[in-house]
Image 1 (tube, rainbow, N blue to C red):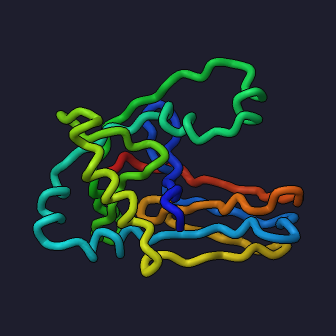
Image 2: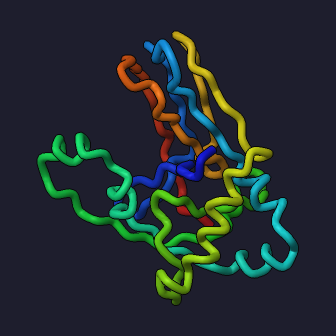
Length: 182
């Protein structure tokens, strides 16, 4: 993954849906794969000292950060001003069903750590953004007509690879209701 992996953070509280499913109705003839990264593996591979540092930190997430990655076409199609949503979440999330810990920051929404400036937060966030998408934590899914991918959005990041220019790609996706990260 190239570091643009993300969790879907939804609504005013920027909470993730518990799970996400996607079906390939008409995958691109070429490209358009989706990469997935385990945030369990990313957290568990950190040193004990780094895990202790992160375990009690909270991060500020903002919907406006995702706006920076929009294309010119996205921005010109946007007809209305959308409100900015800001929420604070734990940097390390404990999965409510498995009890396992996972990193819960992402380059698309996480702006800074609570109680710190963006400048102070930047070095550690940059490390985490690179770390959480290391190749050993990832897999790549190649879409075919009728393919179905289903992932736990509470402990997995995904990155739809935008390498299918000029090819049509039609997907349907669902998101199951989520819970507040803890």
